[in-house]
Length: 117
Picture 1 (cartoon, one colour):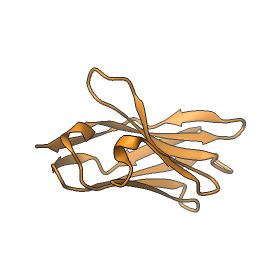
Picture 2: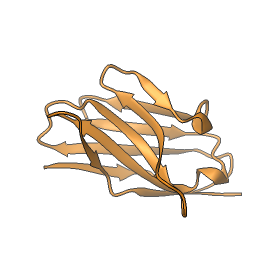
Picture 3: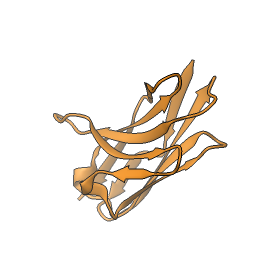
Picture 4: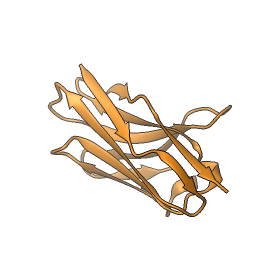
C-alpha cells in the first residue's frame, strides 16, 4: 500500500511564496517519477511540474521561472517551491507518483493553495 501525503498549502497574497511537500510511504523500492498537478474550480486537472528519477524536470509554461520542483530520494519526498504567486495559481494541488511495477500512478488527497489579489 502506497500513500502520498501533502503539506504546505495555504493562503498567501499575490507575489508571495509557498512551499509544498509530498512524502511517499509504504512498500516502495524506487519511484520512477513524482510531480504536482492542480485543479481550479470548474477546470480540468493540469500538470504543474514533475521530476523523474534521473533528475529531469518538466514544467507547465504558466509556472516556468516561478516554480521549482525538487526531490529527496532518501526521504521519498518531492517539493514544489512556488514564488511570485498569482491569483491564477489558486487551486487544489495534488501530488502524483509513478511507482513500479510498471508506471502505476498514485495520488495524494490534495492541498488547497489560495492566492489573494
